Amino acid sequence: MGVTHDMRTTRWRLLAVLMALGLVAAACGGADRSDDASNGDDSPTTSADAGEGGPADGFGDLASPCGPAEDGVELTDQGEFVTADSITIGYGDDAGYQAAPGLNSQMSDAVVAMIDWCNEQGGINGRTVVGNYYDAKILDSTNVMLEACDQVFMLVGQGWSLDGAAEQTRVGCELPQVPGYTVSSTVAHGPWTFNAVPNPVDLTPVGQAYLLAEEYPEEVTSAAAVFGDYAATRESTEKVLDTYPEAGWEFLADCQQTYPIAGNVQWQPIVQSLKDCGAQFVYFAGSPLPNFQNFLQAGDQQDYNPLWITDANFYDDSFVAANANGYADNVFVRLAFVPFEAADQNAATQQYLDVVEESGGEPALLGAQSTSAFLLWATAADACGAELTRDCMIDQLGQITSWTGGGLHAETNPAGNQPPECVIVMRMQGTEYVQAMPEELGEFACDESYVAAVSPDVPTVVEAQLGEDRISTAYTQ
Image 1 (cartoon, one colour):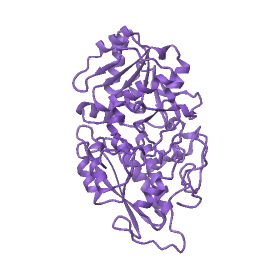
Image 2: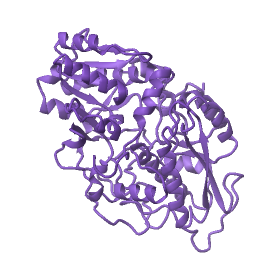
Image 3: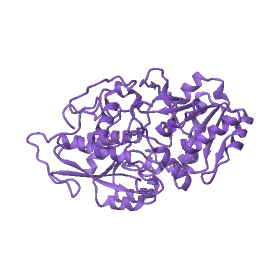
Image 4: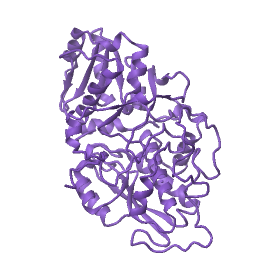
């Protein structure tokens, strides 16, 4: 697929595990810091054209938030988690889950690598960053959150499959976080939560829907959806069905198909139903392996080969390697990150790959998300200077309205919990992904209409219990 083998995210394993369990409720100053704590100018990121270089000791086009204390500045103890010498943060994954050893460990690889990168420059205003690792093993998220509440200043770059189970505990101890990803809608909109690449429930990226409708105007008027019978895929499908019609998609009545999350799936009847409906473009929510690959094989056997649109978890080396037969050549995937294939054109992407590999970790798309989360956290911590407190962090993070992680991804608005208005659509071709839209590798397509509001009566929005400020009130009432 490009840079190295197995560099793609292993998120498909997470989805496969969660589908088997049926448990999920919903699938960062140094010199030259800008006054508004954004990373660069105010213009949207539209292409990966930064090239080699970037600020000295910076990350991509982001001036480094790490470095020694300024002359004459006296650092003081702010509490047991922030001393004159150190800042203790928490991070973690589900690597200890026995059914999928190492699950999402690339996220922690990225945080460890970035802590080392930062400390080599002098830490944050001279304070060494110390990381406490928490392995939730999928089913232990509440217990690790209880530990983190008593041990860390903030959570940074973590990703726990059952984060929703631990949210009441986090809110109860008022622990701020800049996660690598969120699963539950209550966490995505949680108090004192700032996402580098937001994925809220009330707003959703739809740029891929517009681009595909322009290219395939007839096919999108005969669309259908296939999703697993559990919360994560149901919620993502609800958002698609609610928002894609704004881009010209028409979903065929009584043609949406659900497959069981446990046991063997009989794909042939589902294929036949789609074929009988006349569906020409199908949204699939779930895991690429083995479910979707088996689905594609069943479709080929029944001479049914529509176009497919999927989410970023399908941008995976294992899925690509499984396409030697070409069954997945009609699969499109949306991305908000610069593809790894464009690393030689984009300083931040190449730097992420280099930093993680030099640290002995494994690069992956989720790792790039954790890297952006760490940089976001470090930028706010740097802006707080000597008086580093949680209140200051929340205030600083609440001012960062333009963010690209130094050029790792399209522009987002962490303070406003706004997803990106820019998108890249990749397409499978044999055993590699190629950029389909826009045509130039690494270039994003951007438009205000590429983020759509989800109807307030959609169940996933209702369940989030959002207040007027779009923050979940589930555990604060």
